[in-house]
View 1 (tube, rainbow, N blue to C red):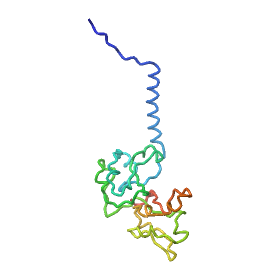
View 2 (view 1 turned 135 degrees about the vertical axis):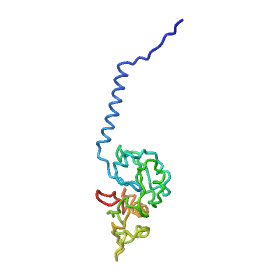
View 3 (view 1 turned 180 degrees about the vertical axis):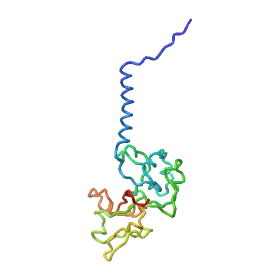
View 4 (view 1 turned 90 degrees about the horizontal axis):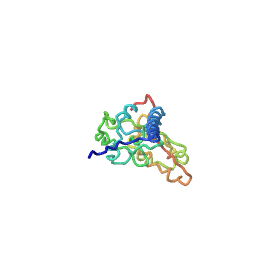
Length: 201
């Protein structure tokens, strides 16, 4: 007795849905490539953003090995191409330049650098800085190991961009967000901005 071989059948509806799903994936990929990605602060050392995005496999090893927890995963709001890639979140800590993230990177997306530190960003003061208004806070100055935060006679801070390497310890220590949290403040008194094109990394 011969066995009847059953062959799968595909309905027109299933075929249309499959085609639509494939086209959607292409559209998402095209949109991700075309979108203008926001400037993000990467762990040390990323020389070229496009090269970094091509190399990074989003494995999360750099995030898990970071002793200060400053490395976090980018979210949807950071752009589709950046999703789950490592970014610096100074609300969680500051960079020690311990190079552990570089050592565990399997693709060379994070590269070794010369010297004890490298530039990953620059500190800037914001309009919620307590010291600029009252001169009553010196936290950013106290924690800066590189003498990048300078106080004037009234104890108001300024930033020396030549000395700042973007470690972010000043941001992590800034109490402005805590003191003004009831006013819906989301920006601390000092922030690290990404390096602009032409700035030394």
